[in-house]
Length: 292
Image (tube, rainbow, N blue to C red; front, top):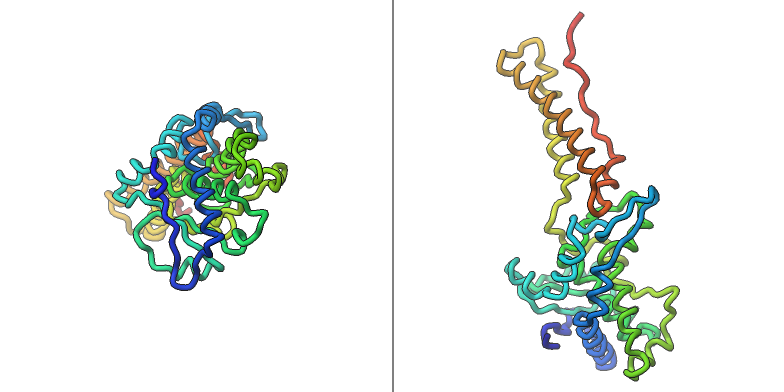
């Protein structure tokens, strides 16, 4: 993997200083070293977590149902994944001071990792923090996290691919702290118990577009469309034709079946994400109204 696969850029309103660029370049080198580490790969393959109901998952939380092997293969071969999407593979690291700068930036049609100038300007924000932030944001750009909106159980977010991979980047770098001076110096500053690398997607909210739609959200959209048509036909009940009456009966049966399938899909969730949608009930019409 070549270092020039990640470019340090600037925007019209913000730029990195020479000292900040040195810190970024060191962080990029650490990221590459971690990404190609056997320890990094093995920890991802062995990852698992347990929810409040003691249900054990061997996949990351809200990871679109991808297996651990699919996760590690995608992030270690992220250039290939970007190529399949028709996206230029070079990552670009850009600076920002506010969310307004991010939103107003004209895309250069390349995957971007945003880094806060307020963070990188501090001595405590080390190259290892930068490596963690790159890994976290890359996981989101690779669609390894399907949490488009606030999850029902935010405490589970530590088990999501972006959060775990950001933390694992630090833990993997720790293996070299005794024989790589720069990494050893960084760990003398890092507070491992309260490690926070301040990824922009967490600070600023959802700034990266999602390309994968959640299956439960798709169910909800379809159910909502059918409910709308059902209500329209109910209002015309006294004047319905035979075909319209048949359609109304069919819609009701489909709604009941869809809801049953949606619940079954949640019950056998691979990554815990469907369980978050289980509490969001969609009202299904009872029986067709009849006039007494």
